[in-house]
Structures are given as structure tokens and as C-alpha cells.
Image (tube, rainbow, N blue to C red):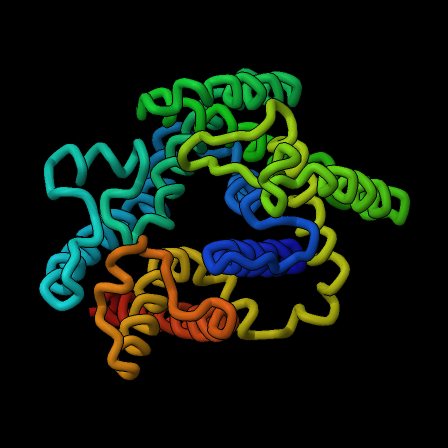
Length: 346
């Protein structure tokens, strides 16, 4: 059990590193673009941790406390931060403050406040897990969830309707929650899915898909990446295939290097603070950006004409942002947990 928990924690660490690299527009794993699987990897991990023995009410309560409660706290904090920094940076980084934008949009798009936009998947994960809890009682097989994901992709043409978009994301994510649960309960320790034959099959398949990768040659191909938050897919089946190959290569990497990194304390800290890293990395990135602009005497307007993900001189600074962002948000997460534990003892 200890090895199981440690492996999942290291898989979570890898998953968040993939997400952050994607936001900085580079690929942590060559040939596997982050946006071809980075979000569904977290749904898969949630499926690995899915427990069937809780009652429905207990399950909802636990998931609300672990997912939505910190989400609400972060939303309030970042709304305040956004209001405070608006006169300084010259732009309100978010949607207008209305009841709809603060209460409903978190579930529909999660982009009500730009700085917390990476947390869009938290309300979605909360919904998807509840849906899976209900459906799991019926003992539906993998084919059902696979068809559901295929149908979700067909709803792309209706993604401008935010309610359909919400349904689409739920339908698509259920497949990977289910696969994570199946992996833990029926595959891990019973079947070797990391044999040389499977490795070369996955790498061969991914290399064939790369031939059509419109992410790098927009005039030719279908692309391997897709944008789940907005329900944007280039193909009816490739998003599912690349999700599966991306999840597999992530599991393979952890299993391959586990014995060498299982005692790396900082990697475990990353895995234990994925929520805080996701919530705070854009704030750290923007602090770096505005600091550089101030030092160099460059007007802040140069950033305000772009989106929240714009950062200074990406050719030179990408890996600086990556390293500082991971270190700062990991230890910020540790600090938050330390303060929380002190408050609980009072």
C-alpha cells in the first residue's frame, strides 16, 4: 500500500509538471504534447483513488471538502487580489463581478478570474466524480464510457452553449475516471502493461500520429492537442487515442524510475501540493513578469495587450519561469498547510 500511495503521489507530481510545462508552451515528454493528455491524466488519477465503499452522501461530502471548499476559498482570495492589483497593472484580469460569474461560471468555464483559470477543472472534476459515483453503481462496462466519450466529441459543434459544454466535458472525462479505477482494481499487479512489445507499440503509434500533428504544421494534419475546457477537438477519435498514449507514457515513466526517485522528498512535496501549484502558478508567473518589466523600465501595457499567460522573452526565460514557479508554489503550498494545521490546533 505504501508503494501504491508513493507511486500515485509521484504520478501526481509528474502530472502537474506536465500541466505547468504546457502553460509555458513546451513539452516535458518529447513526442507527447501536454495538451494531448495533461488534463485527463488528473481525471485518471482521480479514478485510481476512487473508493466504492462510501455512501453517496459521504462521497459527496468528502469530495466537496477536498475539491470545492479550497476552490471557494481560492476564488474569494483571488477576486480580492485581482481587485487590488487592477490600479497597478491597469487591467482587471477577469470577468465583470456578477452573481452569475462568481457562482455559475466556475462550473461552466471556470474562467471568471484569469489568475485562477487553471482551476477550471476542479468544479468539473467534482461533477464528474459524482456522476461516476452514480453510474458505477450500475456496473456499466468500459465500452459504455468509451461511447460516451465519442459522443462528447460529437457535441463540439454545440460548445458555444456553456451548458452543453459542461455536459460534453463531463461525458468525456468519465471515460478516464473509469479507466483509472479499472487500472487500480483490475490491472495493476495483475498484468504487465509495460512490456517491451507494448512500449514499442505505443511509441510507434505516437510517431505515426505525429506525422499528422497540426500543432506544428497547421497547414497539414489534424493535430494531437485538444482543448477540453472549451470542448475543442480536431478529430473524432484522436483525442481519445492521445489521451491513452499520454496516460500510458506517464505511468511507464513512474514505473521505470520509481526505485531511483522514491526517496526524493521534493518530488513528493510537489505531488502533495498539486492543488496549490495549480492555483498559484499564474500569480508567481505574473509576479516574475511584472518584476522584469519594472526592472527594465518597460510599461506594463505591453502585457495588458496580451492574455494572462503572456510572459517575458519566452526563448530565454521559459525554464526560469518553470523552475521558479514550481519551487515557489510547492513551498507556498507547504506554508499554507502549516498555517492550516496551526489554526486547527487552536
